[in-house]
Image (cartoon, rainbow, N blue to C red):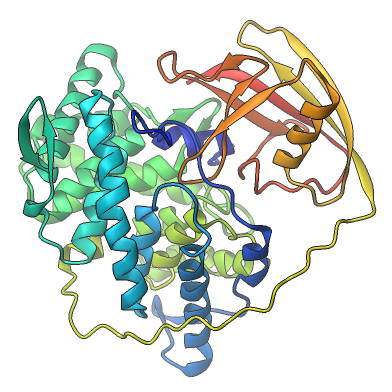
Length: 456
């Protein structure tokens, strides 16, 4: 099965909320936000939306929903959300400017702390750079100081990529993962920075040897990001050791993405389709190869699947249709400053009177297991289930950490999912990996949730 699981999406970035490292988690979103997601159809002709009022309104609704998420955001500002707002055709420039200022303060300070503590932050640093680039901000004015030496953001990003590459040489894997590695390469390329030939080659080899595994499945998100990075390198005319190998890698990435298409049109699953379509757009795929996937995203949007801002931020650009490669040529001129947020009536969420039984099995890294059971109202989140278990069983404990995708499960019954050991808590429901986070996954029926500490 090819999918992007709940665990993979959090591990892929390894971003923690404290100042030393952004490693494993996200912020919890008010349930009301999920009730204001867009409905309606998105129509496209030749891969572009029809420019009619009827088809323009859904885009405005998406933008407004993403823009509204900034008002309820907790923790560090999300550069991915900012990117999506900037890549949109419709803007609220005042709110975008306000969010950019938060990125330049709070996110910048968090990155400075991570660098000072020698933490690998290539993925978050890359997103920060892309956010600045998308606003046409002069990145030469953005600096970080390490060991009393001040250097620009892009200089630090290039050094981070060299460290990632050296770790591949000695350990056959990056310090972080290939998703962050690809994002770092893409960011350097989009900024017109020459990417080290050896850095490029390491990614090509990873594609060749199918090194984007996550447990028993392949990471379509990582293939998509690698595809955009390598396509950018090819477009830039960068010298590579073997141009034929680059083309072969791009062909293989495209093949992997297309082979992951489900019967409903999603590529991997609902939450990997946005990046996958971006990659197909970047690689110049004909409309016929991604049209069904776009329709699948529209259907998911109508069904309120995308109530997580991070998911929305990756899906929205592909429906424009644009990819992150478009950031390279943004001029930031004559932008439509017409996106206005209307007041929303308060929504009263009624607790379901129907109760369902949830069994939670915790399997430690050594293989020891413990089983817990609790009755919860239907539509409760998995996070609600865990909170209730903690009050019912004295031997059940857990901790979460914030990240761009939502609260991430970091400790269960005293056992950590440690980055140093490349371990994480893998979550599944009746044997199927979760593709949503613990605050987003809703309990619809009696089921067994397995929480297993495994390595990656």
